[in-house]
Image (cartoon, rainbow, N blue to C red; front, side, top):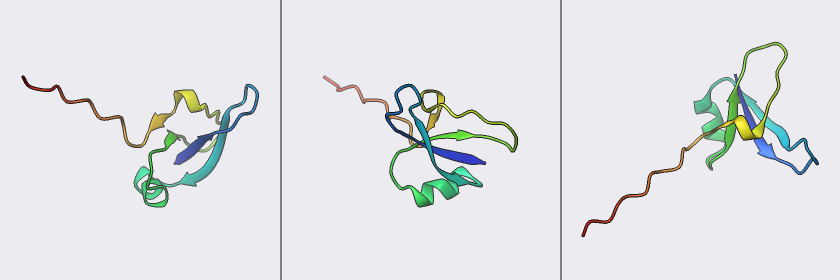
Length: 66
């Protein structure tokens, strides 16, 4: 399961779960923009925005040729 996470200013509790999806591909269809997510199984969970993965990792900058 995939939990889609967003930032909320919670004075120390900055993570809000805004969606639960069966797969990452399903989440990407619903959220076309970059988002943070955490994979989990049923049972006790703890989500942290700062430890979550990005759906579209930042691209490496290309070096300019001289």
